[in-house]
Image (tube, rainbow, N blue to C red; front, side, top):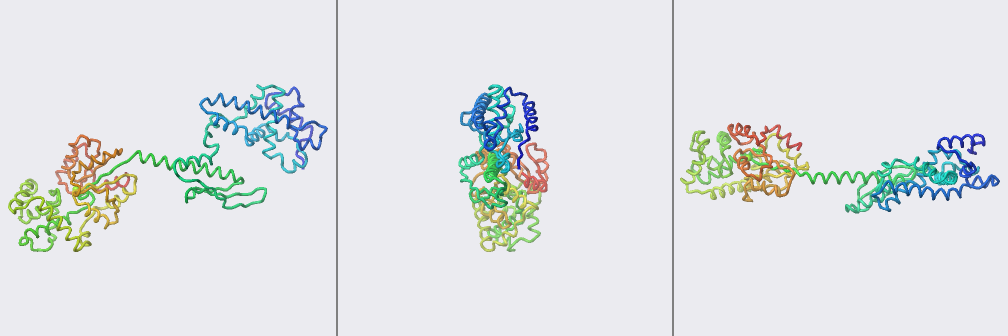
Length: 503
Ligand SMILES: [Mg+2]
């Protein structure tokens, strides 16, 4: 089958081409020559030369036009990049594209065999055709004329630069990127080759380390690999960029334990009773407090600052002191009871800790079971641990108790982030240590108003965002005072759980 235009149609098409480019050949023989493929000349040697000589010339013209153009347009690019850009604009694919834009392929004169073999669509042939045409134009109209045509066919400079320097060679760019970030070497695995011989279909996957980064199918193996490399590069960049943004923005949430996470009044009341029983066995006959006694303890829980106070509060309850005495003279009574019984703080801490340890040793399950956790807080805590925030617990409890209680309820809190009594530091000191890590944001959540006030008094902790928990062991007056304190964000349990889950 011969697709060469008949001579009349050909002559008409030549005219149209010249109109299209806005240039009329003075010597049309040059134009004719540019359109004659060697296969055509082999059949009709009497009609003249093939386009190979003009192609040779056009190749050089194109190189000069492009070199000069990108040299001017890319003053900051080195010669390596300029070479890459020039080859991108003058490779077979580009030249084929110019040929098609000018519709020179329709004008090409091919030998019968070549035409039947679909030569009119062969990129190598079409690329040469453009060069031959450019050579002819240069011969006939001079450099400026050739240059004008060339530049009219190029993609915009913006589009060109958008592809460089990396995207022109995505496989190379990906390899470079992986090396830079120690990600190993990407490999391309041919999964299948299907379809007819002249139009094969390749399915390829790209693997980095042991992970598949993607797979694609296409007619050209090289093209599919390029596509996969480009996509993998894009997604790796996004992942790394996301990670670095996270690193830059480190949010810290430091939480008090008792009264914020754990409703420990029951456990503290029981431990207080057991410890008091060791000191005053005759006064505390029952092994464990009655539900009524436990309820009474719960009411005075706000006046407990640290564990061993549980013993003293239990004693005060046993003395049946009016509630007002707890409210107003707690410290006085603590001291009075210690004096009357020859006890000091260290002794009480020892007895209280020992009581708890014994209880855990005897019946850990029972000990864990008396810990209450505020509604929804464990889920919110787990959500926090899954987030990008760093979570700490600052507590006056011993760390091992906190860890065990949380573990028993399915919260795997990092032990190294629980700062407890064992470290012999105040919460404000822990917060200063946390700030030394230069996080971008620090939140501290506490149910004791006086602790928050102590933190407010430390100038270098001004940047710490303070949250007051109304569901803990603060008194009603504390809740009112907290609401008046502009530095504090006052939370109900429900809104706090939401905040913690979404931070
Ligand atoms: Mg607390």
